[in-house]
Image: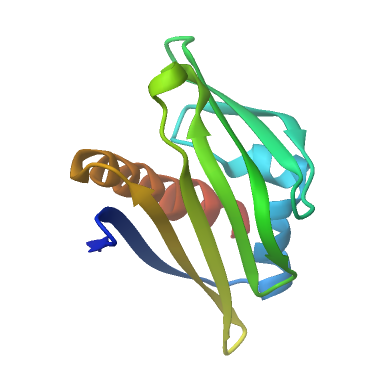
Length: 149
């Protein structure tokens, strides 16, 4: 779902996984696990840096099947183990024009399963929000779902 919030576009997604909160949280916060599922199908992710502490930074390189590299960087804003993870998001390849957005993930226990509530906010255009909606959906329903099962 895409909506407006203070003049910026906000994207919200919900997904339920048949895995414990601890397992799902670790998939997001452990380098060796994140590299196994992050990104679109047929992309390979290499984590250059991942300091999962408040203020710590991350740099992910995603290699497309055609060999092009897409680099994502940001820093962690809030971390509440097994409950909440919030981080900034910026596409390094876009250079000076790259906008910084914010991702907040809520982890909710649902009878032995885990619901992820992802809010990706501060998009300046509807087009950017839609592109990220497609990519998030693909990664969450494909990569993360496959990894957790």
